[in-house]
Length: 463
Ligand code: ADP
Ligand code: MN
Image (cartoon, rainbow, N blue to C red; front, side, top):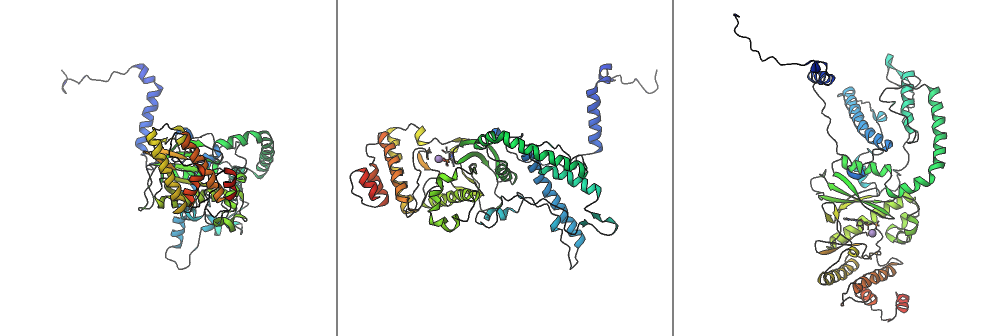
């Protein structure tokens, strides 16, 4: 008998297959690795644009998003180094010039007011970062000149980022690729001729896709809102119109305590397609509120003014208690407001909803009331009022789409009002509301004028 007692014969049976199993080997290896290098850096899972809206095919955008993250870390590191070097010294050295100045990672406070700032054009391409004028970095024997082969090679690799987005450059930075000047110049030549070729080829195609989706810069702007936590997630597109694209998003947390972000938001992106604004400039050109700014502006800024106008008009309406989306934030040509609807389903437009005759009557009186309030209290004419821009939600009518609204003193203000009245009166008369005023009566009721002409031509002439 064995002096150490009976051995416990619960030996783990191990088949040859197990021993040979590659998968098992990998798992074991991974386990070992994990034990040796416990994960110190927990990568926070960043919120991301989700839903149908996600477009991972855009390398440029993904790259820019990553760049944004990288730049932030880089700058933070730089700040730490700056602090370390300066210490308590009275004379300090600034590393400002070495900071990654990324156009979309600028201070958000700057962003918040920059719709007012018409001097600075945020759309201007940013200058490529170069070696500082003096031509070298560091000091003593650590000096590195701009001709340094390694630095130069890396910089060339980084400069490939400036090639057209269609030009696949691969992850040269990730693998620390160093391109000699000769190679870089050859690539650059090739990239340019490719770009010209593809521009010719895709001129048409580009145009049509730009109609549907938003451009990368706008996506980046929206991503930034998600990244900052202001929006939880952007779920998808609700509407693509001629002048705007509207998205649904779940609200997140506000950076400031006093502001509450609605649980569901609508993001209205004003289209930056340059040919659209021409049709509408008569609204804004003659609006004295924008008068002295109009002539000096480029088309992009005019589009931002549309967004700005919608924001101001919505605020006025909100103050008067008219049911309408509540403004959350405006960034450039992207306006975030509260969502009218529930669980991602937007409230139906009046034209799409079948109301009982009772509700229809209720809706009519509400619209009449709102038009009067809009005119008298907000000093505004909607200027695009119709069953397309009224939503039925929560048993009442909500007004939307007020970027083109003007004050009654606008040279065409009353004309617009008359058109609004015609739309409203026709809609409700067709909808069987016997009490509905005709367009002329409605016009008088809203404006307080007393135009007595009994036919449309004379009436319009007087208007
Ligand atoms: P456009 O100028 O393109 O007509 P709108 O402001 O009318 O822009 O928005 C287009 C569509 O998007 C609307 O018809 C409506 O269905 C939807 N929408 C816009 N804003 C909201 C909102 N705040 N809540 C819910 N749906 C909205
Ligand atoms: Mn509309």
